[in-house]
Length: 219
Image (tube, rainbow, N blue to C red; front, side):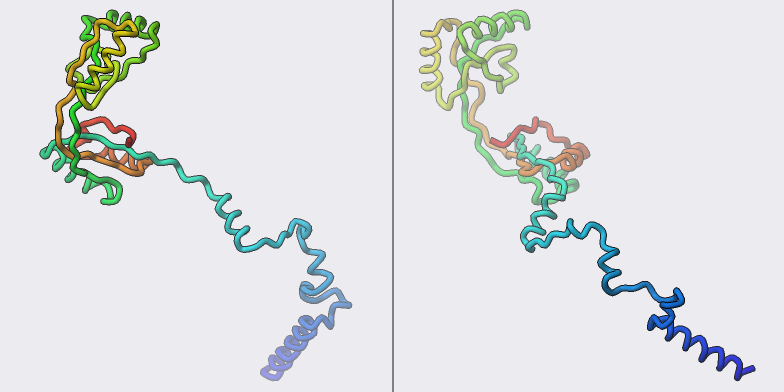
């Protein structure tokens, strides 16, 4: 019995040797050819093959990647000392340190050429139409205490605002006056240099202190 298995093993090894060396190719047995011309016959669209440089290959990879979503710089403030400290603690729990900053800032006084306040929205709209005829575009008010009213321009000094008012008088504006929209104040300015959709979502989770002042584009 042992002799039979030895002879069988020798026979199988011989058959494998003959198969692997393609001695049985004439009988229809043998491994899949990997040489020529069979290798060329198995190519798929060889004419589409193009040799490129490393730089061209890198550019192709970059173009294939989806474009990064745009980000924008936003800021809010001013925050007083108590507000800034509470906001600082809340931001530390939600955002990485490089995503935000709270910097001290002095906001200068501001004077505006002001019209109003008006008794109702209808009177305000009427005044806007009159100014449109004169080709004068009011600016948003920065002080809610002056609502409902219209700003015809903001200035860093009262003298500059007085000069602007004199020019507007010559253009037909006779009921405006100069008022101080805000006094000089110091506080902290919140700046978020690169805000995307993901960061906006994380800002909405601030707890227990939200950003109490509106976020605006960085100037």
